[in-house]
Image 1 (tube, rainbow, N blue to C red):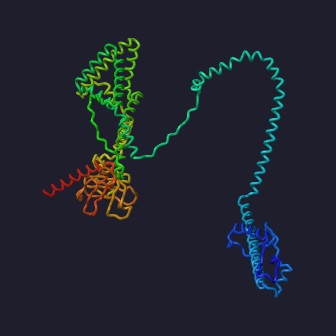
Image 2 (image 1 turned 120 degrees about the vertical axis):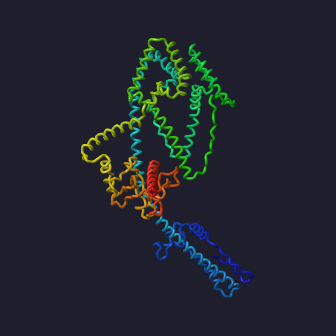
Image 3 (image 1 turned 180 degrees about the vertical axis):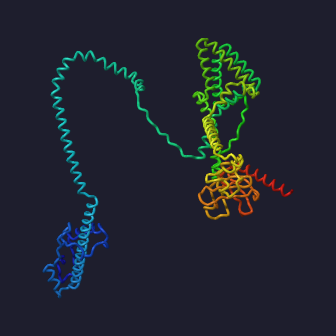
Amino acid sequence: MRVGPDLRAGDPDRHVKVKQRGSVLNMLKRLDKIRFRGHKRDDFLDLAESPNASDTECGDEVPLKIPRTSTRDSEELRDPAGPGTLIMAAGVQDFNRTEFDRLNEIKGHLEIALLEKHFLQEELRKLREETNSEMLRQELDRERQRRIELEQKVQEVLKARSEEQTAQQPLKGQAQANNGADRRSQGLCPRVQKWFYEKFGEYVEDFRFQPEESTVETEEPLSARRLTENMRRLKRGAKPVTSFVKNLSALSDWYSVYTSAIAFTVYMNAVWHGWAIPMFLFLAILRLSLNYLIARGWRIQWSIVPEVSEPVEPPKEDLTVSEKFQLVLDVAQKAQNLFGKMADILEKIKNLFMWVQPEITQKLYVALWAAFLASCFFPYRLVGLAVGLYAGIKFFLIDFIFKRCPRLRAKYDTPYIIWRSLPTDPQLKERSSTAVSRRLQTASSRSYVSSAPASLNKDEDTGRFHGTKKGNFHEIFNLTENERPLPVCENGWRCCLINRDRKMPTDYIRNGVLYVTENYLCFESSKSGSSKRNKVIKLVDITDIQKYKVLSVLPGSGMGIAVSTPSTQKPLVFGAMVHRDEAFETIFSQYMKITAAAASGSDS
């Protein structure tokens, strides 16, 4: 700080000039740069908790010097007699006050910088602990050591190879000198191989054997819409085949007399003159030509049987649960019938060749031997003429007569008789099971006759010895001995009894077997326990009986029978009955007999 150099009494205006030091300004700029670089001021520790460090530990250490006034200035300030001394004293005091404030501000900045340094060191220590820098450094040193070792090994290998090459060079020189003539003579071989590979290498590569790649096809999930679409696609794809079969059948049935007569005449003439094969080839070419014209937009339609266009229903977007279920059932029924027919055909062919029925396969065996001998001793022209004439007469005349006269066909049509008599696998199983059951019945009847008392007649025996799985029938239901199940339901019908009057789940639905006697309707519960779970209903007490559908969501007429009696508020339902129609007819007919007998007795 300097006071104006010339302070004279005669000067009217006195000015105080203050010159700021450059070091102080630089320090302020640096502190402003790092002032808010770290945490907020609120997060800092108190000065009492700050680390023990002096104010000089900051990296940007700048020596501070308190500005002092010179002796001359002090003397001039102390001079009370000089003019303008009050003004100068006030300026100097303001300057000293501002310098002191600036020093305090610098001291605060230094403390903030020291705190930031402390917290940054703590953060660095935490980061080192989290990242495990020491372990990373150790691994890096190991990898460097390995790299150095590998480089040394590679250099050693290269040196060994270079030494071997230098040792083999004189030997190669001698070999080249000795075999120079041989190489000249053999120089054409690589050229020939190269030319051959360029010309025929692609074809040779095609014959190279490669392992087969096993591809696994992804299966689509079950979907009602996808199932119906596939069935429609199958129907559209099989339509040409079915139309061709219908046309052949129409020709054989003489559906159009003129068309069948022309076809019969042309076929017989072609066979007689040996043009049968050219005729079939010409018909195939004609069919392809017509298909080409149809594909180009021509409207050509020729069929012996008039085609009936079926109405195609557009697929619905939003279907209810019952509609989807019904759709799946319809498609499943069609698929079941189609697969059943195909399985019957394949099983019959298999059983024909596997000697399942020897008398049928024997006919085929003799026919094949006859055809083989005829082909060996007779010329092919004669054999072809005989086969063609027989096929034409069989197709156009004999089949027409057999179709119009079914009794003649059943007696004399040998292929038809053989095909109808061929069994399928389910028929074979049924035959074997019936044969086994007959053997068991005969054996049991013999043992029963030998063990039964001679004084009992047949009716008493059947009534007394008939029983269910749990015991005798009349003992289970507390009936007389003459009450026994009708022959239709000797084994009973599996069903479940739904009693709507009961509220407990165990009493609401019971699984068991239903029997019908001459006077009672008996239900035997499958659960072990007392006879209270069984149900006995008199046929005379029945007020109403009808077929019942337990779940309205399911399609069809249901699988239940509802029986109403005066003792129950709601009808008893026998549901989940597979043979529902048979059981209903049996119960209803017996009920009508009982009511008719009761009505006739009351009239008399």
